[in-house]
Image (cartoon, rainbow, N blue to C red; front, side, top):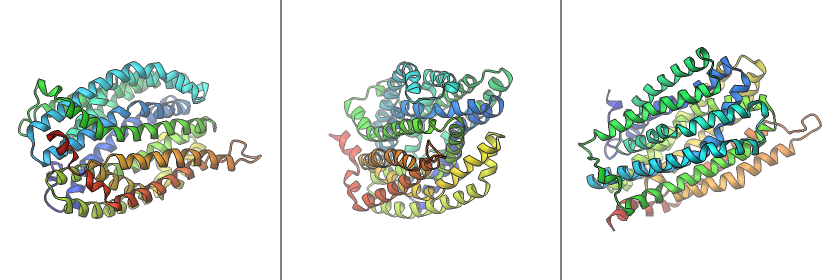
Length: 462
């Protein structure tokens, strides 16, 4: 099908090209989300609600440790898309080589540091004793096997920069099937519990990484990767870090805020922790259009800026964001209509289903706002301006999200609710999303991001 071929974003209707590029990526993101969702369903059904809470409580710490890969992936996508747009074959090979080398170094660092800090962090967060052992085992296994997930994400960023979002989808579908089968075998058949789903995830991610590396090594018509490209020089490493670091910092701050908020979440007990896991799993799927279209916008901007087509970038940003908001509105409506049934997939405990659905309804209006944030941030990143989205995220996280969550919970305390109203956790998140969308739109409209255009090309020519 033409929809699943490599997309040259420099020609054709901007919105059509953005959506066409985003569809395989959306399906891939859904498959990626299935990793954690299947883990949750399997442990929730075959081990119990406490095991479900354990897998979810490990999430914020895991996200904090993989921020290095997120930064590298964003930098890779921007560099590759701009070099591809400018048709610079040798620079393209050097950029990919730099990504592979930095990813290897980041993986080794996480494999060493991750298992050492998992336990202390879980205790610092007041993780309930009933689940802390499972949490620590899960995190240790994932950290030791981080190489597969790291390389898959970075090589997917390379392929996206080239306009190929379909190959990553194919590889991810294969690994999702592997993950699902191994989850069932390890947990339901072998009785391995929470460690079983961790091992299933590690093995499946390694499969996807091997497939992605094989694909990249065969792209000889676009660039030819050789051994010397793995050490391309300081300019390429420097540009990769400069472009990727703000996104990594953004994710690090977001992850740290989630860890701080997780401590507040834990104070409401195992039932609310499990409900939060269910909501966040469903939330992950609802967010997929925003993340996919935002990433598509980054590639779109990068390729067109590399080709000197700024007017096309502005047109695509406007029309693409409006289309994304419409898509999100439809999906949000479907979630509200059928959400209760989705909650029942994770657990048979009716109280848990009802609590999860109540929290989900609070978040619903915020998904349209997230489309604005992701799409316009994607355009700015594609132009090389990764700093503005970083500052928006820092402001929103440190000055809005965390204080608001603790403040609203404190204000809601009553004799009947001595810990406060748990719904305030989600009210604070909704307000944060809306403020973030407003700030992103205002700063996009200033046009300062345009001055960052072609920064990659200029940096590597000097």
